[in-house]
Image (cartoon, rainbow, N blue to C red; front, side):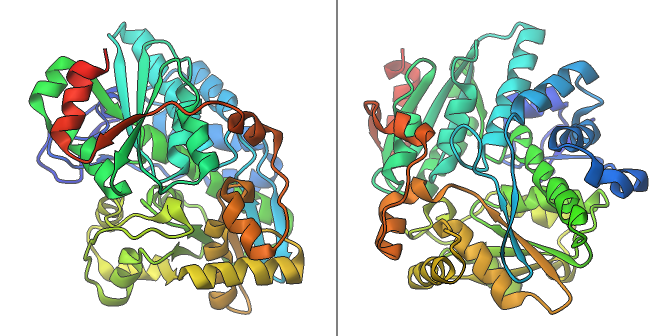
Length: 435
């Protein structure tokens, strides 16, 4: 299948080219020319399939033309070697727990899938070293770093904002060594993302080294996140709760909800989506006004959503051909302050015993405030609460058990490269300092 750029000024690309380049030459994001519908028979029987079986059917619709069936199936099954339970929280609201992977965050799936797909293309073509640049506001860095750890032919550079990710998140990508380099940027997530995008546009740098990205701008990172929505529907169908299903997504760079919208375009019967924001409410304001006004991000306790100019907004616009009315027909929005997030974590824990992380709290509250009487809601609980240990413990006034996976990271020594947000300092490091 061919991929085009959302800016419409770059040449079409194959899947392999789109994955390896990450970003199109005109700074646009790659989109597939076709979004294949899945047959009704699939939806009729979906509750009988495993997570891996569901994901393979979806992956085949995306990538089956370009990747041999046995290879694609192996990638999917290697990626989804953990569970994602649906848990009833209260009344008609359920949590899809996507934090049971290696780094206890939903981005484990996209990171592991892309690592294996990119590794396949590198082996197939015998390419030289591929350098992955990834900006992170929290969980992307750990998921990508751990997904690519030890993969031959790939070196990963994780750029993160100094002092703006939790200690546990930071330890998950600064302690790995091997083919993973952490770069601590004196700036915001938006500054990190700008460094990555500028690197892709720099001719001298691209001649010096083969670059790609593992942020949700890469089709191999964001498209596999569609698996969650099909699986959530299957689980709710098992419970007899799949009619009038509303899914709420804590939203930062909007790759996750965009993948869900792809699922809807493929025939997945989701009634509507809710994008839950923190104080970085650019998309929420767009839904209210029809005007998109990016602005510098502000730091919040839901740090993985601290994005002031969501890259994947371009994909949402393209998906709906710029039709504002069509977008607001499928997507609602809410936005919450730190105080409201804290209040939600505390109240939900006291009333139900369910412990939310700050991002999941945005998703839960948005459903609690928006569900109609005949609707059932599922929110994506995107990370384990222990990844935000100090914040969560200060809210509930109790100790939170730290899973063994996280404890192992905390015992390791941090290794990172401090850099300013100046692009030329970053470029110089990649050209000369990274040898």
